Amino acid sequence: MKKTTIAAAIAAFLVSGGIASAHPGSMSGFDADDDGNVTRAEVSARINERFARLDIDGDGKVSESEMKAARDARQAERFDRLDTDGDGSLSRAEMDAAHQKRVEGRGKRGAAAAVEKMHARLDANGDGEITKTDIEARAFKHFERMDTNGDGTITEQERIETREKRSRD
Image (tube, rainbow, N blue to C red):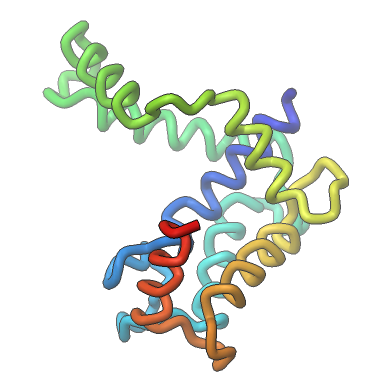
């Protein structure tokens, strides 16, 4: 369970805001030059940047202690977002508002099932660990699906077509 939780946290951090069905003009940091297109190099650069933020010791893997440090930083950021009046504590009203927002966003998904599903998708070689290679394999597989003409660039039109195709399927 601990590895699944760590894997899910890595996955969420690395692919959050992914290229999946991004709305035109909303490439969540992947379109580095803001030209409306996403190249394989831009995807690779984004993965490298995000993975490097987690892989503090640079060994090519994200350890439990590295995940803990990232989690602690995210928790501090999350607390600051929830503490809407900035007084350093969370009131019942702030907690209720945050809970309501989370419930509305979650819909009918089961959190535990989502974690396991995400881990299975991202662990490309099935070894129970998620490495940068695993993340790249998934990202580039998706990139190649979206790059319908195979020119190494995802255009706004290709994103629109991919999104439309997904909505029909």
